[in-house]
Length: 123
Image 1: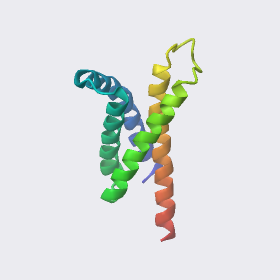
Image 2: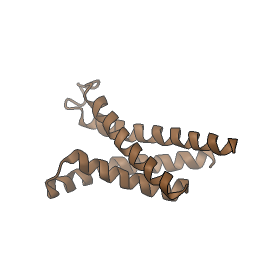
Image 3: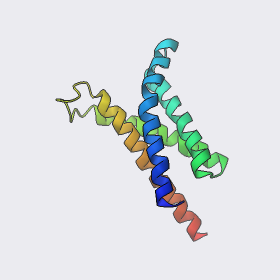
Image 4: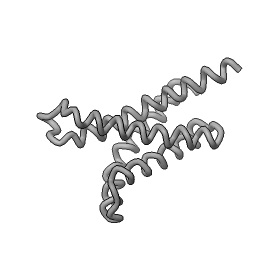
């Protein structure tokens, strides 16, 4: 996949993450479930959709990488939000965690893509 197309897909994925966070949190509130579980499942679904439309790998690799990336990015974002790096702008670390989740997800997708590309080029 060309770098320009990957950048376009990552930009779309970034804005999907940012725009769907509030909807997923309101869904968690309506269902009265743990917001982190709802966010994790919602981001996993977004990742699965991204993997099937953009990457077009095999089914098992799409699903496993999507769920792993959603879980790892959400965990990393929560830890990053707890650092309180931008306490003047974001006293509770919520916006920082949301932005970090989107950035970590995109970074992890690029790592997975590069690994997959290296493996395919060796075969």
